[in-house]
Image 1 (cartoon, rainbow, N blue to C red):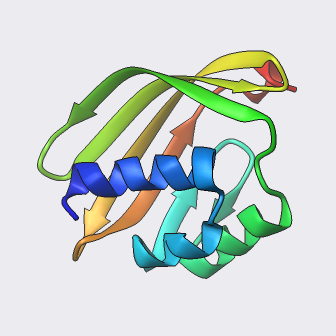
Image 2 (cartoon, rainbow, N blue to C red; image 1 turned 180 degrees about the horizontal axis):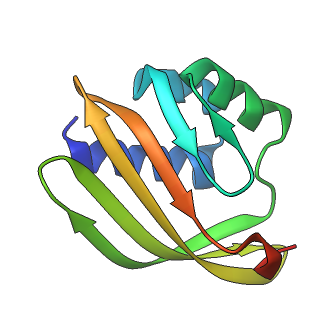
Amino acid sequence: MNKIELARKYMDIFYETKDFDSLDLILNEKLDFEGPLFKCKSAKEYIESLKNSPPVDVSYEMVEEFHNPNSICYIYKFTKNCRSTLMAQTFHFEVGRISKIRLVFNPEEIS
């Protein structure tokens, strides 16, 4: 898969299929994830966190998509339990897998 396909596959798994074990195929084992509520330094830790506390009643509506040779950025409207916020999420890649994810949003808007 190319970088755009990897990022789209991630979004499909997170929001649609919830088959979190399949993230192992697209995430670098040393995944560096950072968001306002959680940080981790491995794909295994990230996948386990999703399985232990899966996203429920969530959806998104894409607003903008940007990419350059090294990364992809999605800006989208995230909805959870009928409350929405704007999110920015960047994906960085190494050796055909997602190696770093940064997620920026205001958690107060959805809590």
